[in-house]
Length: 307
Ligand code: HEC
Ligand code: HEC
Ligand code: HEC
Ligand code: HEC
Image (cartoon, rainbow, N blue to C red; front, side):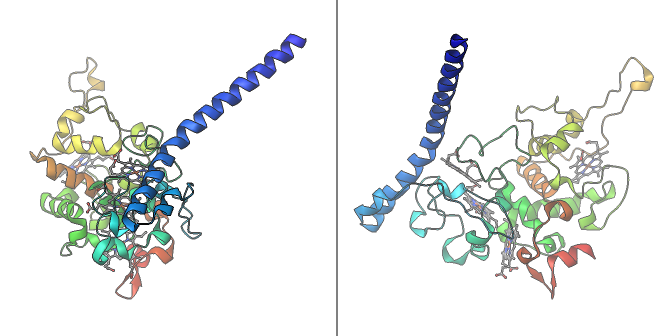
């Protein structure tokens, strides 16, 4: 009996030790980044005291949006113009200086993940950057982050509007109009509703899981089995990614390759179209609070979306 108790106690101690070890390992990473930030800041401000600033997990949280974003724990210089030429994660946000577009979206109100997706609560590099298997929404870095603008700026779909701040999305939109995607696909944002091909109006709001359940990744070149990679390769070569099964032994199992045309797109064009299809959002899923939607011609974006 005693032996059992001792064994149990030992197990608990080992478990706690392991927990502490994991905790220390994980917290070490952001602490190193933040400490380096303060060292750089001390040097820039000529104030050595700043180098000893206390380290802590910093978080942006607005009660209306309700997304606790801890990205700034490491990206500590994001709103400091003096960090323009520093390496990541200390760099000032692009377009922050000189009242660029980002200044219309104050970090205190918008945080980061409303545009960048990813896991706002994570405080390790591995848990949010690159491809993270368990995430419903992968981090969007440039230029894919432009797929988030249409959560709020619905007017971006109008054919004549061009926003230089979302150049890649604009290029994708233009291509989509020119190549006639709406002839086969229902795209609510363009007002088209044929049924020859899947409705793609809400594609950008699908989770990775929902997408992976109905898409075959086996033909992909890349090992990153996520939505944006599937879309990109599918644009480059639709019949390679969706070959059908024309030679199945049983005639009833035979399916034709996809009828989606191969336009011989360049890599840039495939990226632009991928950004475009990922920008096609379901407002019900995105559920952006009204107070975050820009006013458009006397309406707010939400009303315009519904009409
Ligand atoms: C633990 C520290 C840490 C946290 C937390 C963190 N980052 Fe980073 N981030 C980095 C580092 C280091 C780099 C540069 C190296 C790299 O690319 O992996 C980087 C690079 C980036 C880049 C550019 C290149 C890329 O990898 O896509 C973006 C965009 C970015 N981070 C956004 C975010 C967002 C958004 C969050 C919050 C959801 C976040 N980061 C949270 C440390 C961090
Ligand atoms: C309104 C949308 C929006 C918000 C909010 C936003 N970003 Fe960005 N972010 C962008 C866009 C767009 C780019 C690419 C700009 C470019 O390429 O010139 C970008 C670029 C970056 C980069 C540079 C790396 C890259 O991919 O080019 C980092 C790092 C980054 N953002 C981190 C953050 C962090 C951290 C926050 C929160 C404090 C944040 N962003 C909030 C839209 C946003
Ligand atoms: C969560 C909603 C939201 C997202 C996502 C968003 N914006 Fe905005 N944006 C706004 C609001 C609200 C304003 C109006 C701010 C004001 O009136 O001062 C605005 C203003 C702007 C403006 C100034 C011009 C104008 O019409 O007012 C530009 C340019 C802009 N956004 C670009 C972008 C880009 C590029 C992206 C994607 C990287 C983006 N926005 C993502 C909400 C958003
Ligand atoms: C001749 C008809 C046709 C045209 C034109 C066409 N597609 Fe398709 N597309 C299809 C069919 C059929 C599928 C379903 C089979 C497949 O995945 O290839 C498809 C699949 C897709 C998918 C995957 C959707 C999903 O949920 O599986 C996307 C995204 C897409 N197309 C975007 C576009 C874009 C953007 C354009 C314009 C550049 C375009 N398509 C033009 C027929 C077409």
